[in-house]
Length: 300
Image 1 (cartoon, helix red, strand yellow):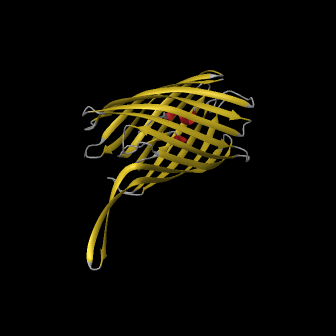
Image 2 (cartoon, one colour):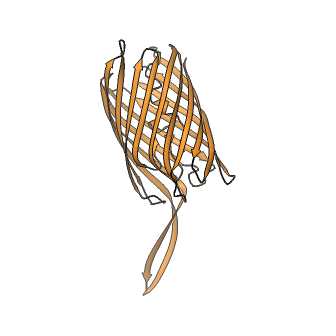
Image 3 (cartoon, helix red, strand yellow):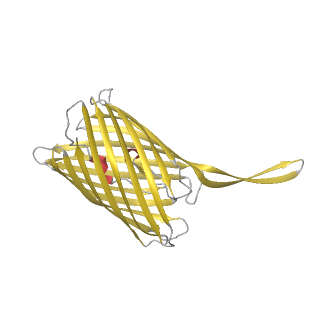
């Protein structure tokens, strides 16, 4: 299930604050429209994000998000997501991050799900960067039936057990800047790949590959962000662990567009739209989930 906004990727690019200690906060929310779905009706989400920076060498980020989805059969899902991320910048032009994401959901299969994630990146400020992210998700209540057959004294026996679901993900990336911010604006291009492997086939296979392209344009008080991806994903972890797709769905492609306006040195607003195409368990149709979102951020 998608919780945090695509706009978060560049939220602090122009954030103000040269002090040794800085605190930023952002409120976000969005509505979700499910087109051609045999299962879902509509949904919405909202939350609060916080950033704490210390001496330009350490940062701690966290968020609390709530998501609601109503199903056509009258049931619904209420879900809370809690995320914490620590990043270290002590090594020059290098950052190392580690975090955790916890899911409290009415979806029994992924309730109490835990995601551990991290990664490393090297960069030249406003020139280029390269890195790789890792994630491990474990859903202990996801019942995966396994049947084993064995023999003893010429007699055959069959036993059935269930276990949780493990999801492994690796995501390399590369990005670079071009342009002149002060004259006609600057561009940032980022290409990212995803490889996701499930411990068991839960409906759509065990191995998934996809590629994503992001483009950001910076000019004066505006930031325009465009993003698109294609391939196959399920149980994906995105946006530094703040976005976790925890429902049993196979995603096929997606895109997002947002515009951010920096009102002054300490506040900004963002609005945008995103859409994902996916298949649900038990349905042959391709469903489109279209999200309209809004954020307000401030530096204290």
